[in-house]
Amino acid sequence: MSPRLKLRDIAFFERPVQFARPFRFGAITINATPQLFVRVEIEVEGRGTAVGASAELLVPKWFDKRPELSPAQTVDGLRRSLEIARGLYLARTGFLTAFDLHAACIGAQIATCAKKNIPALAAAYGPAEIDKAILDALLRGVETNFFDGMAGNVAGIDARLSPDLKEADIAQFLGGRKPLPRVAIRHTVGLDDTVEGEGGVADLRENAGARYFKLKLSGDPTADALRLTRIGNELDALGHDYKASLDANEQYADLAALQALIDRLDREPALRPIASRLLYIEQPMPRDITRQSPLGSLAARGFIIDEADDSYDAFPAARALGYHGISSKSCKGLYKSVVNATRAVKWSAGGDKFFVTGEDLTCQAGLAVQQDLALGAFIGITHAERNGHHYVDGFGETPAAEAAAFAAAHPDLYADAGQGIRLSIHDGDLLTGSLTTTGFATSVHPDWSALHPLEQPKSLQEQTA
Image 1 (spheres, helix red, strand yellow):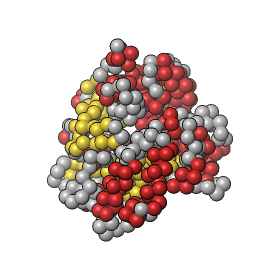
Image 2 (cartoon, helix red, strand yellow; image 1 turned 90 degrees about the horizontal axis):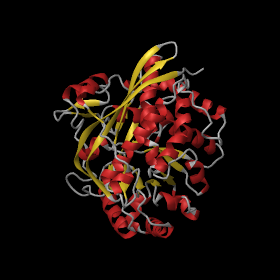
Image 3 (tube, one colour; image 1 turned 30 degrees about the horizontal axis):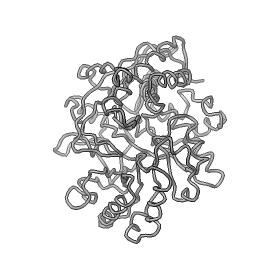
Image 4 (cartoon, one colour; image 1 turned 90 degrees about the vertical axis):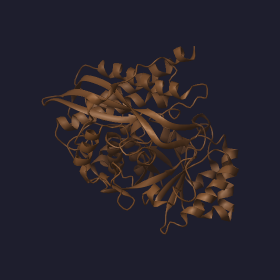
């Protein structure tokens, strides 16, 4: 039986993060944004109290891309999501399993946020970050690591939010997991990133020896085809084979525009280097258009949803439209990742291949990247987008002592090669061995005294008045 817990406190903090280079995806370019930190205190029934933590960037214009909102307003929507979730979670005063708590609050969270003009994807951010911190505290309270704890269903995950599954499906999936010892990085090529020459996509100092590449698309088939041709020419000089994925971040207006790109990938010899190595195409159309647009014959190319993944029924709905995959991001909810991975395994037993991918909103060194890496390694994601090391200078503005503490506790993940402590990438892979530690993939917590309290959110109605 899964242990039960009672929440004692939830606190939010933030720290500024400056980017080492602009990161342009979709219609937004990020140069800086705050990183959220969550600290929770729980009482584990019969075992006493424990403290847990999580972290994630407050990314503008991804969870909520409405054009009438400024980047700052969309970040404020995430802060509002956190505050609403905090109130809902703390209102549950009895002993519950970690998943009981999540399941009891997620519906009210989505509904309350909708009344506050916050869309479902942004609404889920608050519970996602609180859930990670609660799980960290729970694992510490019962003195086990993430991989063993999840295999034993320490959180009490069941099928109440995914009625297409049986309890036995989830239990079988969790019980059969063996964490991957290595996860390959997928190197992101943003729309403003250099393509050719020094600092370009084939520069080993930039791509860290990656064998997988994620190439951002602009939504213009002609411009994208020209840029993919240039990237393919560069990657062919790597000296080793590679695979690629494409990510449009909702920029393709409709199926006709998407068809134009696919026709070029299928027919143009100049695009063959990319087309022949293409694994899948991620979230090509806006989330609302996606739900109304069956892929038809396009489905043969292999598509996944990401921004359209804003509910527990999003993957079954996407499957009915011809999509074969869905992204895992801990900022969208770790329990949903587990449920979707269970679905992919169950559905694939029927002969067609369904899959979960590892995507990244620039998880930063420390808590964020470790917890997301552990989640992916647990559910079987062999390669994952990892762009925090690329767009941010190591630990960024993290105090040196805090960065050193993470490096000392996780020496297989971090190293100082004379330019400060950074992710240590081994032949294009990240190692997961040191994540097998009491708690959620971390032996240390941030220096809470070095963080600022989360900035108070304003309502979106107030901001747009």
